[in-house]
Length: 149
Length: 473
Image (cartoon, rainbow over all chains, first blue to last red; front, side, top):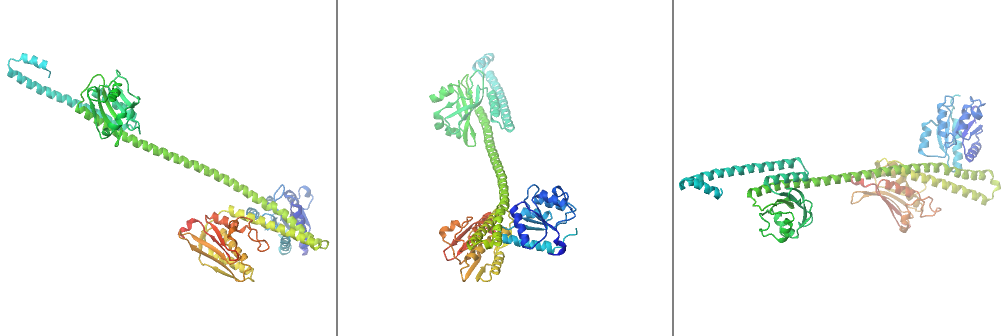
């Protein structure tokens, strides 16, 4: 992990505790050591990003290096979260990876229309899932130059 | 000139010669007076005829025409009753009734009284049909049958003039002129006049028949139109219902895709986590169990994916165009060979087989059929897979994919295309029995048929057609 991205957080938006545990485990096993903030629904994710609600005290100038976004979420769903991220000046450049169970065409279409950077379908096979997380970490944390803060 | 008047003149004349001369002069004079009167009558008749013809042009309503005509004819002939008698259709001219009349108030009306004359149909109808006129000066001295006299007497008839009313060549009814107060000698000119009236009424009857036919046709068309509208309505309703069902199906598969897969991922993921993190605590049996759990959850994940694919094949919109099936087949074969370079398979692909259909769906068909052939020839040292086509007598091409693999027993052919039905054990040949169900759905959506022929250990051939509209292709 290079020094200038190592300190930056990954925002994981995931309501399913199993998927959360599996994702965290996969990140850890692939030696991705960044701090991981978990938001359990769309409202929490937006609160974190815009410093509201439980995150009112947070310094919003610290932005996640990548957001891993599930689509099916309680309260505000993933597509709506994505739309608000792209609408707000402070977050519109943040890399968003949709990480979801669905491979329905309309979800793919909607996600890309709203400007997601990448769309990954969570496979049933954990080894494939782990591999997807590894490649995702490789790309977004090591290869990709993040947008200027 | 009457005799009494002549005798008076004779007495006034002084000699026989003068009387003779006077008589001749007078009778010439009287003759021309007769002629004038006859001419006047003739003019009146022509006027009446003209009015009938005019009315014929103005109204298509038989009742109105009959009523007015009866009144005019009665007045002109100084008759007591003029009536239009109609035979009941299919009564064999034995039964009928007066449908219209004009009658002197002194005498009773004949209208709407049912008349049955069992001898008329047999004996007279055929003559009337040929235009016969019955002309009776006095019914009691004309040698009529008793039953006939009885029928006429009930309407107080003494003298009778009857002319047929024809509709085309069919005897529709009778135009009857009755004299009731006295007997009456019918004049030739009067008979001719009544015949003329009857021939004009025949035109009206003809028109009425055409009109009725026209009305029936219009009514029939209206009914057909209404039926078509009802049918359309039903169709629209069915479409709406179908759309609702499709919508539900879509929602269902969407939630299947989300909700059913997530727990499977947990099962598989935590089984793997156990294998990785707690390996030293598990003996080989425990490890085997966990692997079985993983492989079962993965298989179920695959099943869900395949089911979703199958439902998408049914739902997706078709975009028909020209597809070179030979190219598609070649590409698929090349991919298979590249993925498994260790296998020796001979591919025989007939070039330039062109079809009309959805390119993506037809590729799915060939992919399934050729992959099947590939799979079921895996034990064959000299495997051979052929794709070809032939034109049937009706012009519709049949395509086929043939292999020399393990084949199947024809007794189970029905099972082949049902989802999740398999003819081989999982260990022998992997698969979940969705492929051929998918093929069948795609072929049916194209309006075609798919069937299989096989023999155990002697290979399989799948045949399919695509829509009948390819006749010209």
